[in-house]
Image (cartoon, rainbow, N blue to C red; front, side, top):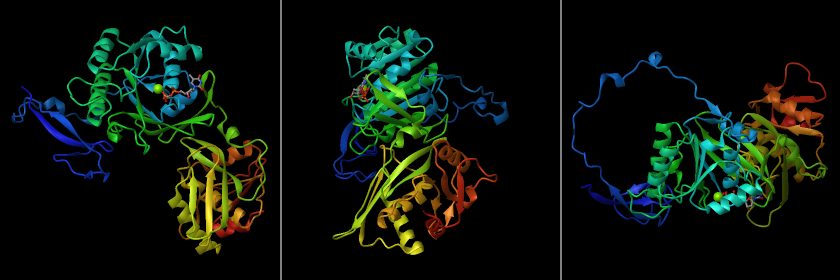
Length: 451
Ligand code: TYD
Ligand code: MG
């Protein structure tokens, strides 16, 4: 008989403690520990080393590995985020706020595989009728895709073993449970155990598996981060729910570039890939105002033009630094460089920064553009709207090169920019048609070149 032992596990990070404590010893969150039952495996006695065989050790050149096949999802933007399609036997976790479009995206992806009879959509949240209604809205109501409304992992695996799908979706991992554990579906231990069963099943059978995960209020994938290391790829839905655009970012990918971004528009017929993302982030008739400029950022493996807006105003009290779509600590650092190396003092000013279009900027290549926007608002002077910017700023005020220089310049030229200010090391060797490249060494030099 297996022995049942209890432990306490944190609902936020999944860390465990043998006793109940008010604060999680791992992540420091308060009042998040809940009791879980641990099933001890029967064979716990030391068996010696006899089980290990010589054949488990192999020399690297002796291992024959064939590159895994990739299956297109039928959605080019999703393929791009995944690094060129779904790898056979890989497990993909898709996280995002409720209602952002996870179920819609996956239903579309399954309906578009070459042979939909080999795709299985397991829903634990909606009834089959609801899924069918959605499929009709998406225009795939006649697709012979297989559906299953079930939440018990053992049953799902048994049915999948019998039916042998090539690709399977579990929507969502918070609703499924395994009968080996007592705790309620959605609790950390259930999510972890159920996901572990499903991942093991996918790896043994070569099924590609999508797991849908909801996000808790802090933005971590609920159930929570415990799943991220078990899967091959973690995709994350970004963007405001009331905006028309949805962005899917790969934050971990064992089979492709990380930080790759796929951009979709939510229409009445589901999600549609946006083929020229730069165009949507630049409003067609941009309003030439102080504090508004365009920068070229790098998302995954392609350049993207994005508008940045800064507002600098007299502070009444403690100066505030408020950012939307950008790290506010990085802004504080940049403002310090600005005051020290360019003599523009911000210590009595409130600084507000907004990245237009709900994009989140994670790279340092945005530094120069952000400071130019701040200066423009501070001086109440419109910057030449035909000029774009990129470049990283160091603590001594120098301008550092960033990856993808050439491609960024070409993207700006493609969208009609006549001028671009870039770090010297990113300057192209040959002169480019249609765009004037101004290569500078430092922040102060860049400011001197503004017009
Ligand atoms: P859904 O995929 O159900 O979200 P999630 O699974 O992440 O919780 O997305 C539902 C939202 O998308 C809902 O607000 C309605 C909207 N939607 C459309 O705008 N057009 C469509 O064709 C569909 C199917 C949904
Ligand atoms: Mg859903």
